[in-house]
Length: 138
Image (cartoon, rainbow, N blue to C red; front, side, top):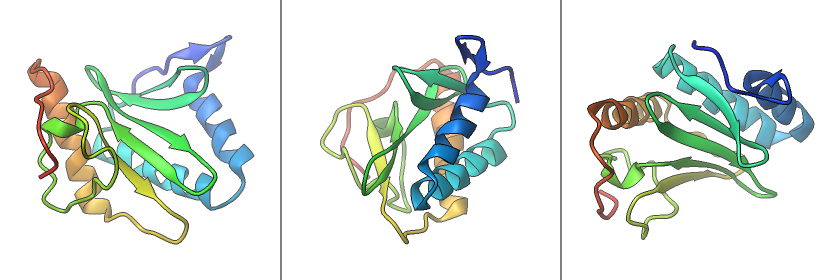
């Protein structure tokens, strides 16, 4: 994994570790699991801490962000509308022209293989230099 961007001298990876720990419930466990899957799908992923506290994973551009709310962990794919999603993981932000998101509620599991495929597809879009295409969820 490449060097993480940092905030106030603290590496992004540590800030993300801290966020997971401070959540201390199913949201932290879920964010941690999804982070592990992202790293498994792309060992060269760069972890960043953006927008005053949003875990972000990048590879030649943003792949996705990981936000935690009271009842959901949201993974927003920056160019999600450009990605094929045959497993229908995207279940939020489906009307947008660029982004797509996966909302994970307590007790829900995301198919690991399908998620890794989606991560690799996002990287392929980023590395191709192609701009995000407008489109509906597929």
